[in-house]
Each structure stands twice: as structure tokens, then as C-alpha cells.
Length: 49
Image (spheres, rainbow, N blue to C red):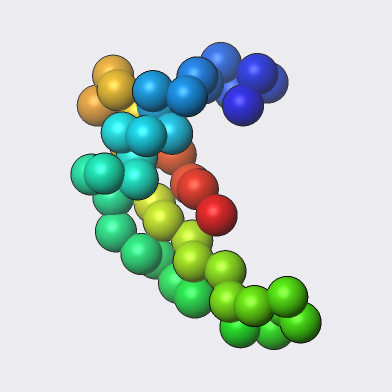
């Protein structure tokens, strides 16, 4: 997050406004849901696993 100049609010906004882009089921610990949305600025794309 620091390398991309993102903070917790950007992650939260992406989760609340984004959509599930894909579900990765190949991890033995369980499925991973990849959510793609945008940061608080409304322009910066953010992907959250």
C-alpha cells in the first residue's frame, strides 16, 4: 500500500464500491476473492484480495 500511496480508506472504499473480479480456488487454505474498485479519489484503480 505504501508503494502505491494508498491508505486504509482507499482499501475500504474499493471494497465497498468495487465488484468481485474473480475467485481463486487453488489455495489449500481456502478461496481468495479478488475485489476490484477505485480509491477515494475516484480514479486510482485498487485491487484487494
